[in-house]
Length: 127
Length: 370
Image 1 (cartoon, one colour):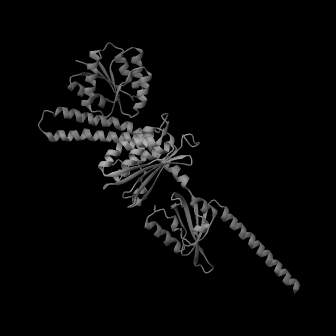
Image 2 (cartoon, rainbow over the protein chains, first blue to last red):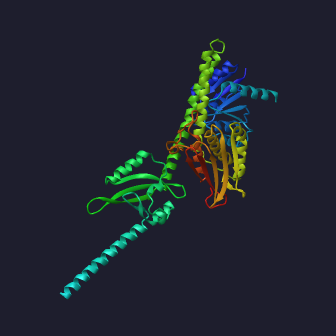
Image 3 (cartoon, each protein chain N blue to C red):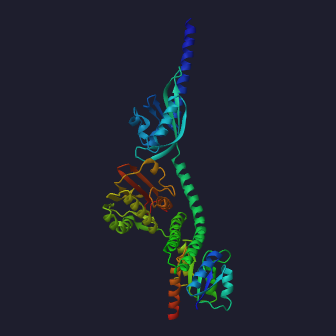
């Protein structure tokens, strides 16, 4: 079963995502905020996929990505955002040397999100 | 005797000279003051207008002589407003109010007007003196500040609103999944409505956010005729289906302006769609461009129903809409985008004749460009 890490500072949203993913056949667990995500990423936890919120207090989504870059962690990621400032995120992510990354804006169609995750995981597996 | 008379005459001459000097001083003061001074007879006919009036209104003294100030009527004030005005001054009271008047060029200007009745020795009103101070610039600034303040507020709020929307929509989608096996279609419909309405709220929030995103760094020298062509090409088919003829009347020389093309396309799409909405039974929409005085002038003109005063007065107000499904944000976003390009968005509208929107953008390379 694929393990998905949900990085989101709002517990209500994190819980909805976790439950929905659990019902569609994933094992999902939550990092409430960027610092918790970095802690998990630095542990031995098995992670196949990351859903990453951008605007979080203390440690932001961009900082999580930057930490992943430094540690050479190449998990597939989908960006979740409550803002429409996508252009800025696209620029920041590109500047970090990542290829294009899927950005979805809240409120998300969860059925569509699942399709995005499945497609990305299939692609990873075929590589 | 002779000496006395000579003394009297000298005294009179002195008083006359003093009176003349005083009159000349008053006259020069009225002629040179920056305020607009107009004197009318009791019936309203203009007997005097000072140079400031000529400068602001665009009318010469001779043109207005014998006419009434009704020539300045902008149509921005209702009948009740004018009744209150006439009742006040005819009963001898001073009337003070902000007026929107119209120049000879059809442009509007805003004044703080004080009209004072002038009385003769017996106390009867013989004339009125109107002193107007031009506050157009001040009003524009106030409006700009208000919209900018609102934009900031909205941007802050929008970020916060998307999270609860996500939570509501997510929970509804979880419920949808849970009830997928039960035969009650009604419950599914309710839940689908919640999800759909959350998406609608998201669209509104996205439009709101555009308030606080002035174009930055993406300005390019653009041929406005080409941008209009792209937009017209996108909409032409729909216009045809709605029985609306789209007429392009472009200036020959390329009208170049420094713009964020995507944002400018949004402005044109909004204005063209509004023109279409004004023509439910079909008609024609003309897109015209001009180059004039260092500006690119774009006109989008429909021959539709026009707007009543109460609509045109509130046109750029956020959330104001006359459309059943409108958000009331289209024109305020347009206003904001054009303003961020150091341009102007204006309109002229006459009921049963149609509406023309005018966009003025600084020409690329002119001193006024961004």
